Length: 261
Image 1 (cartoon, rainbow, N blue to C red):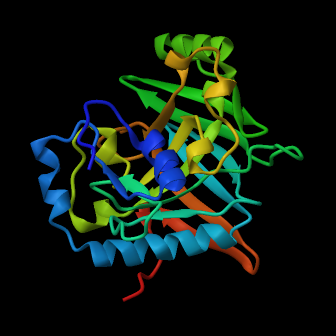
Image 2 (cartoon, rainbow, N blue to C red):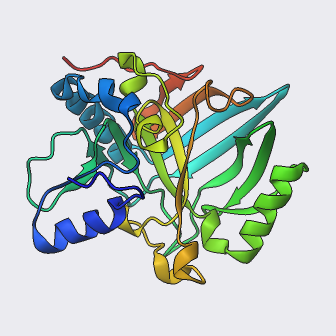
């Protein structure tokens, strides 16, 4: 159990696979997260495995975001990838995960053999500013908006292109179980939709520390789409493109799937 100040999740995942131990990582764990440890993790585990099964089958995921009167579309390429289920039940040697837990996640295809189909526009709110990224070949390659946060993000992308990698599509389930965000990503990402930038190799992707210019610039940053955290960015729809047709996964930020009992 790693209740550390900073996140040790990535090295624990790598170490668990290599040495066969089990690990629960709890970076920055505060008292406010205790209610999330009292949930029924058998229910949580079933739900995240159900979501994992869906993203495993899906070829892509389409998003519609609304910012004021503008609607932005993003597609993430899910081909050639397998999802992960972090349900808080860590019973198998060689596995590591966060506590509190409750998410399914998958690394979008990063274009290692052919061009990734991940493309479109992704809005992210920073304080009062909304930054609009243009995504191409699974990377943020341009900032289309113009405000102070946008200027800072534009500089980050120019200095560290690996920062713009679309590293994770995450689907948390704790929000449906009455848990409120705390402002700490460890818990907040488990509440609903999140999309991460940066490092992905610890989840089975291709972008790792060697793709960054310096060790202190290696990041994996989750952007969590909850009204309490990004009030100016609305998640209108999340649609999985399945082999037998589209499946509406979320509408107006809420899951539309029927949970297995």
